[in-house]
Image 1 (cartoon, rainbow, N blue to C red):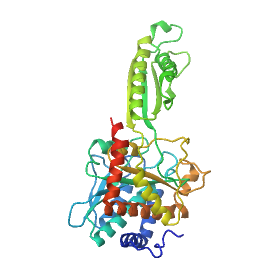
Image 2: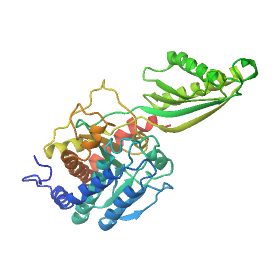
Image 3: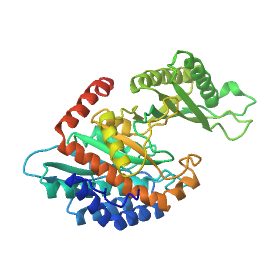
Image 4: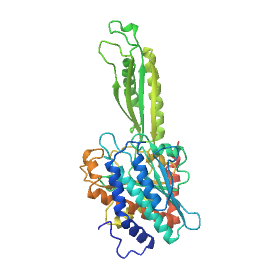
Length: 406
């Protein structure tokens, strides 16, 4: 079924309002997606993408705060509806690109669909007199910088009851998990001398190699999901000179944040011990910690039903499939959240590739902008109008996600 066509015979007035409004702004949303795609901006540099979204949302009657929470390229756009207090429903926009390959993760689609979902839901809630607040939250720097982590830590989600987003993929899925992860850069500094007299120097590279060996030993006591992959980014300039500087970058992953914290403590200890072996000094530069993901199944099932009502089948992930990490995990620990997936390409097209970048601006990519916006807005409508579903989602959050918060 064409996702642009309202559901035939559908009796829910709110859903019809959403579908009609989003069909009206379809061209503007696709144009927004294309503009972001054509001007890829890296994390925390997305000034044009931020401004295009903010301008459109202001035109639609949203109150906008930008920058937001001390992030220059973040924003918060909101509309309050009805005569009483109601649920605060947020759609999360990502819009940062990847170095070298632009929007090969399709964040232009995430941004346009989040904006569209906000516009569609706000229109329906206002027209129907449903109380609540609709929020579009601009979350920059997802690719490695962890913009949502900063927003969580600075209270951006304290005024949100439910958070939702859709990520382009090569499958239609709900409920996909994510690992905890953290980036780590380790730098050793020693003393350079000619290799003929190594005893007069301090070999920074030797300490770094000792750290790699120590990490291999630590793997024996880590949980099964524990991973640490590293590369040497600086190991000296000449083979006959004892290196006075050596650097490596690591990505550390685990099934849960609690496990990752313990792993990181072991790596820190090993890094310091490796410095002591040679007399080098060590500096550890830690990136933000991406928590594991707790996708709210109550919200996810609502989204699945809405997307399938629009003619798209939605599956569940293979529990044995490998998963990555995203800062939505940190959000899922503080508010009931979904981060669902809609296909813009075939299963053979992987993310972060040139082919996926092209799919993010293809006719199918444009369809997913509107499909995701409709599915998200309709899910927001379900939550806004069904207190039982809100309670069910909150109960699930309290039982699954909150106990793992640390």
